[in-house]
Image 1 (tube, rainbow, N blue to C red):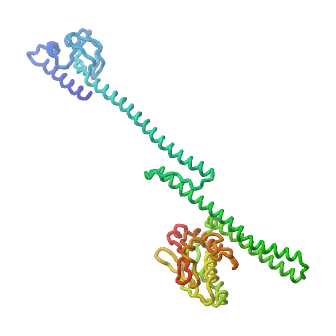
Image 2: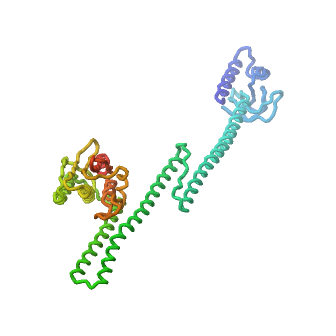
Length: 415
């Protein structure tokens, strides 16, 4: 708007000068007087060098060359003005100023200022209202999490954070918390179960050990009988130590501490080594081994733990299979994974128990009269999980097949 006023004033100023140069105009003073009489919206001022007003509809002012703007606060004749913006120049010894009322410009500035203040006020109100709504919603969600935490502290491990199915970050947080609580509850259940199983499995050998020692104490046994009693006691103690050793190995594997020592290993060589170790005992039971192992099956892992994994699976297959049974070991690359399967045609495991037997101290024989602690498959499962492998038990009609799948892309990322 200021540019438009400047352009309009410049045009009017040129027109005044042009008209004053006409032969019949009488000069600059009559032209300015004539224009000032008509209410055209322009303001004129012609002063001499002494400051006397010669013509125009503005009061005297200090001459300023070029564009000038000031807020008017007085009235000159019948022409009030609230503000003027115009241009002044020297014409001979006189000073000529032509200006335009800035009333509309002032109104526009006031409108912009009022709009800004009003918009700022509305924005602050909306922001505060939105903040109250968001903070109230957030506080309700936090209170829900706090209430759930308090109930869990009191012992109610079934409590979960409520999910409102809005798909926002709070629901994602609640889902993560509930998943964590599920995991903690499972660990607590496992801990209680392990405690119970340890007490159950250790009671029998400790009872036998105590009975033997008590019997030896009460009777006047010969040195030979005493040596046999001591040897039996040592075997019982070795069995107990073996149980604790297996538990410690499982805990170490599940902690992931061994993962930092992973290196490139030849799984083909590991499986062949395990087969060579167990082949004499398998043949002694009049069982047969069939193998189909591809060459060059390399992964990144722990050689000792992988040896333990396949040894446990092979021992489990031969131990629970009758004489004359066939144990089949296959290892091959399938798509983007390496699959190792150990199958037998023994009695197998009922489908309802195939997931449970991967837990600690779980045995199909409830009487627990046969050797074993029920930790072999649990340790094998822990080693498979450490290597990001999937371990699946399925029927072999008859018998059981244990398949372990190592993901090749996972191994590449570890490398």
